[in-house]
Length: 104
Image (tube, rainbow, N blue to C red; front, top):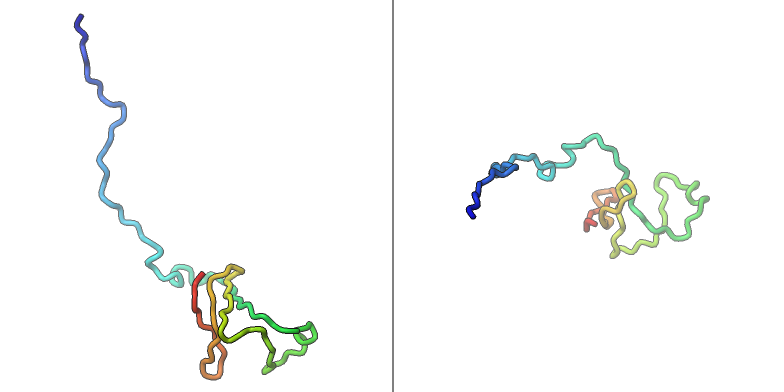
């Protein structure tokens, strides 16, 4: 009994992989250049001791507010409500600023 064996061509043709394609990575670009118009809100959470609505209404330019902040502790920084890092206060000239100490 002779059985004839025939070679069949595969139904799917496999092509060799092509070289790497050039893809522009946005991570290599400065985000400020990509979306300079995107508005955002920065919020720094500062604990305030015994602060009332009356105190809020009485605030004027140059008012001093007592806080529960300790100089050695970092404060959370939020952008559009999302925690992005931790900051500390710093005096720059005659202004009060915050320095970013850690990213979340």
